[in-house]
Image (cartoon, rainbow, N blue to C red; front, side, top):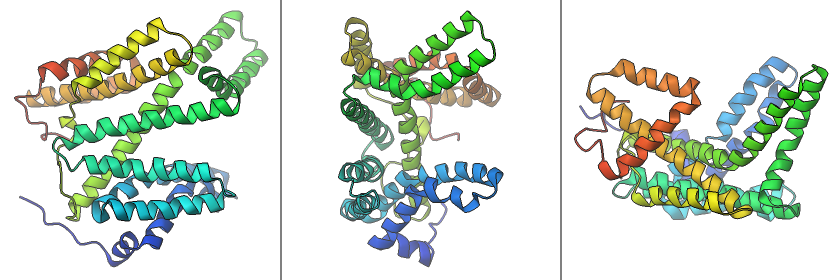
Length: 334
């Protein structure tokens, strides 16, 4: 049975169809991490609790702009994005670069991903294009930061991590840690400095893409979405993603300096994407064979044991060539 679309409330309709009101809502979400915890600053426990709520509100900004695009089109989205960018520039002491980056990262990028959803195979196409945009955005941000400090990209990330590990080092010294603990701390710092850009890009991609899919769900519920309605379980990347992963691994092992660092970050990003595809393959296959308990166990293991992701990376890559879900229906299951 097809559920009838609902109608937007008058308030929601007004906010989403008026440029200034829409931009004001976006600014409220963007600045939630600043003003929301201050409402409960006198009560530390509530301030801490609502800090998490503030982060969630902030991270819903891409969903708002994906929703704006689905309802108003690209021209309207760019107009609202321009108002938001101008307001950010004004409130930040006329920092033009910050306003431009906010407008591009939070406003235009999710709108472009929402536009890709309207095409054939939109789920996979949207995920791929958004991942590319997110990776480029993270690399450009790190490159700009490193150039401002006259450092290499890797050295700049080390500098960002240094205060955290210095505090950990001081704490371990006060606790009387032995030499082995100090060595383990140094190894952790080296490892984190190598993987942080790739993990950051992957994490932001997951958040932004979840926002786009959330916006699609809302738009479908209220009857103003047209495009691909496939679920996350239908995700299937093309061969260029697999080839790019292979090439980045080769470059990461034969080059040095910033090129190697970027290659490692790209490999981590692409491996994470393929692991999501591998999980979707396993979910569809297990559910099709009535193994719902195993599906739950799979997600529990992924949550508590990070190394479990490796088989899913391999499975996701193999699925690009062999399409293990060709006889299954990926729209079944949650």
